[in-house]
Length: 109
Image (cartoon, rainbow, N blue to C red; front, side):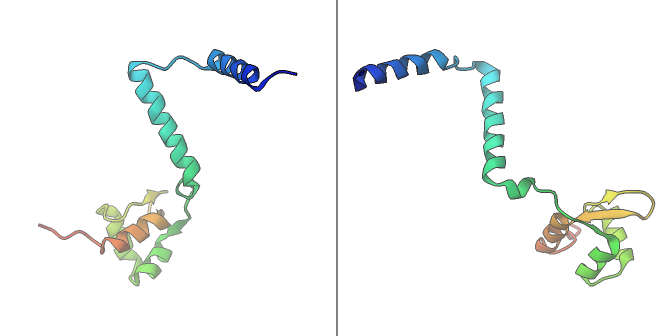
């Protein structure tokens, strides 16, 4: 039977043999950036989840206004939209809620 010190030194030898050399320069920055992005995705998977898309009438109902106002907000880019064709737009729930949180349209200077 081996002693604990012999086992510990064997594990250390195997561990040091398996470690890769540290990346240098720009590669190190890119690897670090990729690792931090991966950690963010693992820690908060709710952000990576796709949001539901709302049609113009649903957004108009949420804002208690008419569909024409929603089209105008999309044209002026005050409310981000996905354009699927003529008069066919979709809005993410997140963008609509952010629009509401910031208080609506930005005021002209």
